[in-house]
Image 1 (spheres, rainbow over the protein chains, first blue to last red):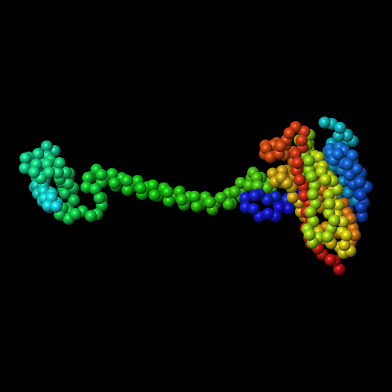
Image 2 (image 1 turned 90 degrees about the vertical axis):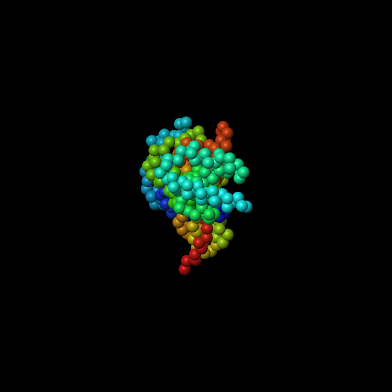
Length: 90
Length: 277
């Protein structure tokens, strides 16, 4: 957090998230999905593009368990994964 | 300095002479002629006489006592010079007015600069102010820019008096602009009392922060952790595809071939400790 009171330096203004805050997953209901996602990230050297399926599944889990507002997946940027296509396209 | 009286005498004499002959059109030759007479030579020659001729006109114009030394302006006795001085004085006054107007104008501009700059920042989005909102349908339509790989590193900070264990679950992640990405933090409350914390985030470098959009996260709202509880906290974000088109992003970062651009994302939890009854 930039707390330096410098004249002239622009300070960062954090913006609130667009859809608000995730409720905490106190009971670990989606923990398995999270573990799958983290494992995928580790295996692929932290490249996000290769693990988008897993992140989609995690968010679907959250939506099912009412830990996240129901949203069509296109609005979350997963439009290319809906039709079952893999993201092998370059 | 008997010469002073002498000249005064001459002035008086010639004033009187001219007034007597007012109606006559004094041709220059007629006026000059007395000075060229021989008896002038002893006193100082024709020059003094011609000088006196110059004062003659002044005497004719003003109803003044020529014996009194003129003490008020204009200082010079030459009418041409006098006119010139008047001109200079007028010009000086104009210049002074302009300078004063410029000074006042500068003062006004310096006061007006503050709201004007704020307005400018809002319209152009420079200076980190809130850019006009990205609609959620933009996420739907955005196309990932696959050739600009960005490395986002994560950091977690906790305020000293908050006893949570808070850390990111991945140190870095490689994304491209226009692609939504998920990242996780983990928080544990090792105490045996429920604790509420609230977080905020920071993105470095500053210019890149404008393009960093969070769709959903766990910040800006109070989060309560029960005793000995450990939770996963997700951050769902994307980097605006316009990042790739911003020329400043090319200048700010050294983008050599395949090297990814590096953005640092920091979550900081600050304290808001509350013990619930």
